[in-house]
Image (tube, rainbow, N blue to C red; front, side):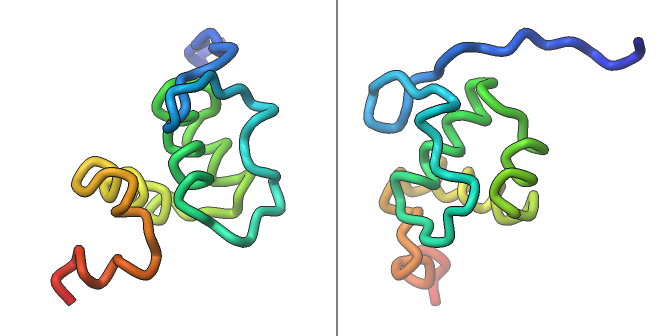
Length: 92
């Protein structure tokens, strides 16, 4: 067994400060990505609730798309995840 085993956590602290479990994550067929849902997925990956690969597969995201959500949170906080504000933050 060459794969590294990383114990799975039961919950992480979500973007609103409450516990977030796998059952609390957005549905797999989510099409409308509001700020809260994006932030929950980022928190889940950062906290080890699911892996980056699992998130991308579960939600049909590219790694670049997920990483852009993460960068937006880091740079601008949750408001940076607003789709309508992206151009403002990018200087567009």
